[in-house]
Image (cartoon, rainbow over all chains, first blue to last red; front, side, top):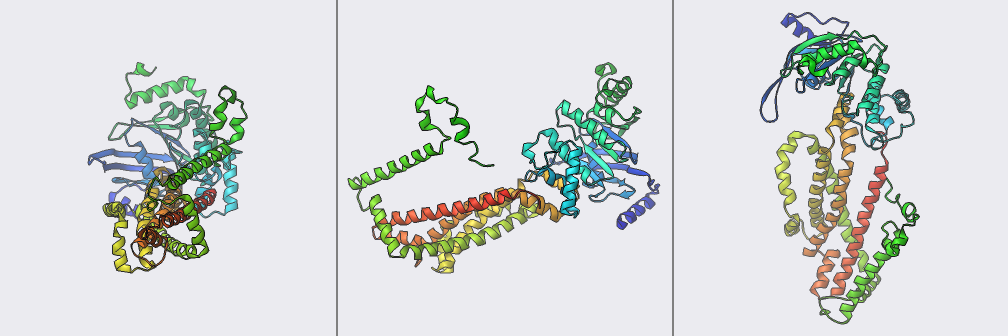
Length: 281
Length: 280
């Protein structure tokens, strides 16, 4: 960690930039991401993207597919490095995977040979938490995500929604300061999706955790987040940054019929580049 | 999990049979019926064989009757030759298999884990594996003598590549979502390897081991057939040179029995490991 700080200092000094504020949970600083695709094509995925997220905020990133939304999460999780610029979590420059971050995908990633309980305990197991402690913790979390009684179930015995709940409990088990969510409800049917969105918001509210959600579902973004960032098509640049001043606690299901919700959703839809204003309404 | 679960209870209690009364005779869920059919089929084949042999439809020099084979086996057991030769063959088979399997699993894991090694070595592995390695048996005899070593080495060369390739395939077949999950959950490389990759590759490793044990026996028998002092392969050659078909078929029956036992053993070990599904 000391090494990280030094690296960050060198970087900020030589670029004459302001050191990230400490109350910032996430800082994406002038990030550019380019890579060579499998068929040898040079791709500029993100260009000059900066995002500051204070701790405790729930931010959603929306944008057309291929705009590099997921690349931002992968950078914050330390899975890829930006070609230019830097990303910071909790004031530390990210280089390599960090244990302060919890990352959840559209696919559940459950180990099929482990029970739900042992899957939830995985993160604690690799951190060396004792067996009885981690299993007790896993049971408590399974109960919180509504899976009491399924502790011994294997992946093959669970529905898609239940698997995603396990993934959520697994992510919560490591108690990360920052949640990175990459379309975690995207693979679910419409009804289950709303139920899980609601449960996630209910579990998150009052925890003070920072959440960065990537989605292509505008109503999901508006219903759940405090703030929605719209990225443009490739190369992804920030097109707009909209505060969602809907009251909390929110009822994900009924908020969709709120007039303000509709206005915000329409605005985002327009920014993304959907068809003319009448198109959606 | 238990393959016997959907047994007779579920279906045969429903009296759907009357529409076609013979259905009970072809009920695929009745273990009793299945065994009756198996025995009937075996009796048919052996009986037919006995008839063909007894009527001398085929020159007795080429085909021994089942009775003659039984007679041979009786004497073979009494004389104790069965134990000496089976022991030699079994010992060579197990040694070749053990070394081949251990090193094959190890090499398969390393190659499967390292993209670099995999890319460099794949063409060589493909060549080695597609080569009919039993054709090298005469060379192994020249290099390692007519004793047990040449048979063990031949069995090893068969088992090693079979196990290596299925292990590598097992490692490669692991869902990248799982290793990704382990990575973002903070698992170290070592933990990812032990808790995700190794565990995920077990079914494929066992498929290779089950195949490998049979190939080990094959390699040993081929080696013995070419040059050996002892062993069931050598016995097959001896009896066929001396035009004793009953001896050839008798020894083949012993080999079949050994192969079945080895296969059954592997299946049991696998099942035991399969039950070990929990943590760590």
